[in-house]
Length: 172
Image (cartoon, rainbow, N blue to C red; front, side):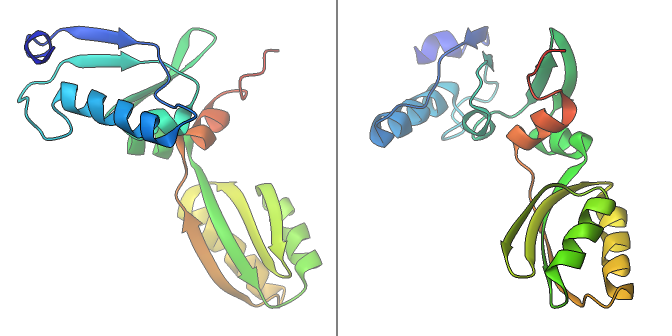
């Protein structure tokens, strides 16, 4: 198999590398990495392999470039970081010492999506607009005397990018 891969062909694989048995799943992934020369860097010019699937976290674990399709149209393509950046959907965890109810209202007014209250005064949410939008939100919370004391960026994942760039797989 290594000899075939060394010829620099392109391959398409439509198979989930996720198996109910974690040991089998891990071994399948290792096998693909080894065959592609990505696991140990054994091939200087590895072939292109097109993996397709709907288990996005699984694909993000080992793909070097990602494409997102919607209704047969390519809506994003690039490295994982490039696609996540293009999705412009940043996740955050926020902690305020003031009124959690008022903070929730201001978060929604600022455009926060997927807002969850984890504990009194602790929220997770997504906010488009990058660091500028997060800074404006902090300023608003501070001006309202809600005492924001912690804002942590949460790295977006491929699933979130897909939902941000498409209609979430729902047809019109």
